[in-house]
Length: 122
Image 1: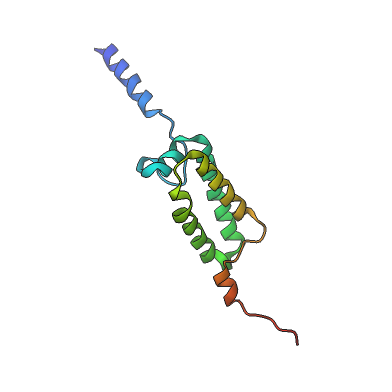
Image 2: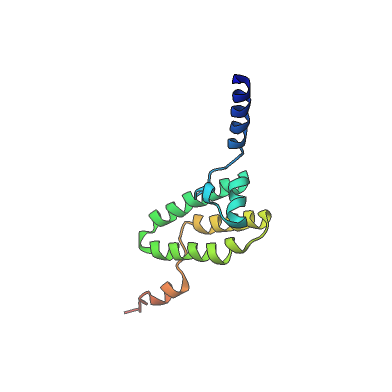
């Protein structure tokens, strides 16, 4: 009886130990191809973690642009990342987004730039 219990416990532990890499969201609630890929692919998981860190640093470095940075991130998620259907494409998309956010000067969207006051020579 104890032997059967021990065997069952070992098997159960094995299934719980299936790789579930860290992500910026709860992998137990992963939906769809993209989130599942992030949770099961260690490269994508690492990129997701890196992006989360770079995104937070970009917002901290430019508090006056926090809303614009957030909107750009949401746009990237909706129209780029979440539309991809291969892990290679996801990796490239993550690398590109990380590079964009890592720039020393956080880009200001054209809509925000057009609202900025224009200085004129005296």
